Image (cartoon, rainbow, N blue to C red; front, side, top):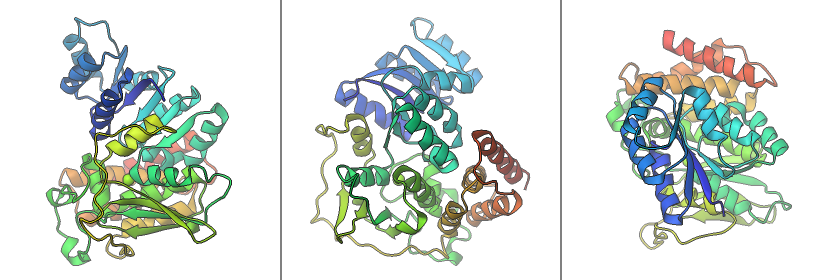
Length: 377
Ligand code: MG
């Protein structure tokens, strides 16, 4: 088991839960990185005593330096600072920053050959081929933190030479499951932010409401497990107890179950291949029946377009992801409607020419173009 951990995105939902698990397991923190929440970062530094802290926002970094002037912690700033924090220790890096901004720090950690507890799905959506190839070259071990992918990873453990016939990715369906297109036209962010099962950050909670999150996870699964889009099915499972399943050639299906709590997959990514006692209880299977059904792609077209962009490949997933990130930001600021998010993604995919076999620079450029387009529109 890893002893030293870097947490990128330490003030977000996954970052805070990661620090709880690090404390529970008695591990040490070597570096932290966050966007700009200096008050919380100060608390985290005083409690976990990392040697290095990166703050993306320059002003916030200056503020943190004042707050922590009585300590010896080294504080760095900007994207270069976050990259330094990612490459800092020889232990595990938890990549829990939100969005495509996690791409360069994740690559920096991979190049150091570390274990990556990957909690930033956008990295694989944008540049899955490049990221997975780099992990192979540098001997970096990627253990997914996303609950569905942790489930698939656990089902495939010990089955590497067997191969699988199908991945069944489960989805809670989000707060709007069962609603019609008409009913969803005028929903507001307050409605979308009320997720029935999972407690998560605002970006992923909106993605769960549009089912874009499942689309991003579809692409994430393709890259992590070398699956073709034809071998991944999405099933709505409102209870969020079965976190995903894998079907094998002999008709056997393995599933991983647990209560919907991110602390379970976070802990597994840190202790793998071992298992340690958890602070979270196991599920009670007598509480509610477990049900499964097909997603409604007409009401939730973001899932459909994500699967289409997965088939297109090239820069299309990066364009889709960037347009979605910008559109979610606009939705959270009450600037566009719920279906405005889908419209923004379609506009970006239609307007920006897809480039096959892109380099990292091509991907970052496609990401930039898509953001600019959505902001202007
Ligand atoms: Mg997930």
